[in-house]
Length: 443
Image (tube, rainbow, N blue to C red; front, top):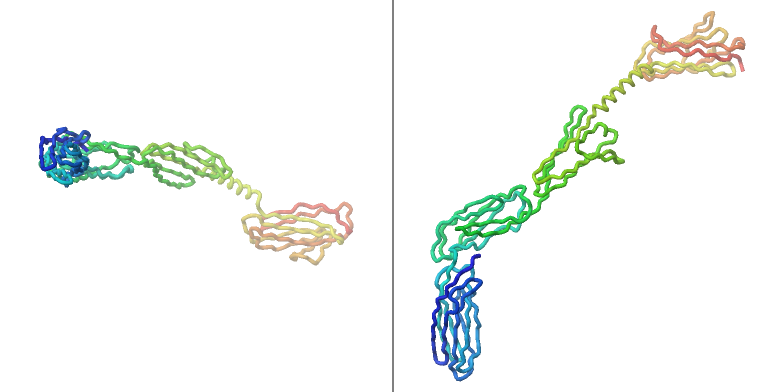
């Protein structure tokens, strides 16, 4: 994470064997990762023939730091150069290092070495930050950090400061030996309504800041609580809604009522839509993260119920006025005289237990002794015949029909008047038929 400074302390050296003359010299004494250090190794071919000159470095733990040409051809008495670039990685610990090298030809071999110092601008490096790629609002954010001591001595006790989401945490690092590593962990609670996007994670140690990116996912979420309160003839519908996501939420709620009760529905803030199936009430809300709203609808059934009760009361009053026991009398001419039919119907809600039907036949008419229905009690007087049917019990909805026939004793040109039939319950008159005027002569 931080660049290493290198101080090359190689002095010019020269080594000669039969056939090869090898020397090394310092080219660049200091370097960073962006500008590596360099040592130049020169070889003179003292052989009488052309030679393949090979260079090999022996540094097992740091072999990846070095780059150089592996071989070159050299004519007799020719000098060839092997530039060696030294580029330590970020894990390099400050200190003095030595690299051994070997120069070979077909007929000779030279071994030598050079030394150099690596210096670091900081004693501790942050080498790893472990975290997920993205997080949801309200989630726990776990963070693992790994530090490496790149100093030449054991590090002191130090505190690491970590800040993100307007929260901060201090974690004790503790001593670390040279080249050693230490893992520390901390965690944060991501705010419930943290907006989506990238957030900066800042890790501070000894005045030096390291920054990482934390991504917050976009979350659409809504919480609904619905309830209905039924009171006598009043229904309250209540919906509590809350945006529990981290982005704006367009919330829509619709209820439908039969059209015939729409006059008694109160839906504040709703748009009313009349459809073939009824009346819809629609609420459309734009809720910001964490914002709450309440939707209420009230149906007052007592208003139509009051009207219905008044209607029923009027109906019952009218029924009381218009309903009762009905008595009707009809006359039909026959070949022998008149056929008389009397109908009795109890259209009230009351039962009667001592019911009597009475009718009268004037003396100008004769009564046939055969009856199609119930036989009456007949009493002859000077004025005519009195007929009585003892009905007794007459329950609500009961219907009775009585028939008798009369024939003229004398022809009456003007016709006759038939007296009303009377229906009684004890001494009370329940109803009467109308007087009937009819012709009265044989056909």
